[in-house]
Amino acid sequence: MKYVAIWFAAFFAISAIDALWHLGIFGWAYRPGFKLVARTTDGKLSLQPIPGLVSQILVVSALVVMTILSIRGGQGYPLNCLVGALGGVLAISVYGLVNQALIKDWSWRLTLLEVVWGPIIGGLGGLFIAWMYRAL
Image 1 (cartoon, one colour):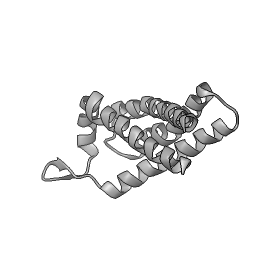
Image 2: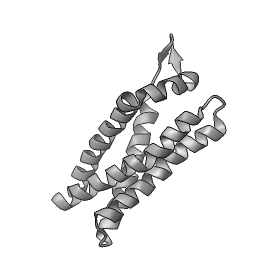
Image 3: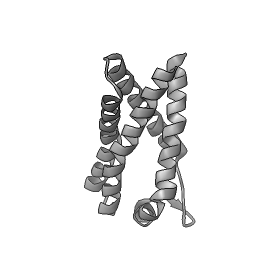
């Protein structure tokens, strides 16, 4: 039951921070680049919720497993943060770079934002998961 609680807490915390980053803090920087490549209906963004939800589930699941393995290996918060940051690089930063390589109008600004954001959200996620694990 502990792992289920950690997963749900991590899912909501990481998703909230990710939404705050993309829609609030750096929304102004993402909008121009996304307008060029986004799926739209009548000029408005047309989100496909299932693929978005599945990708968030996969990212959070990987961060939870990787972080818990580092905790059970006897590692402390600094390494838990590093493990999370590496997970973020693999999930988010690589996504931005692959999009840069494949999508015609994908901007370098979007790539830079994703490369920077990956280790930040991953590291924060790793710290949160480690804290939850130890608190429970």
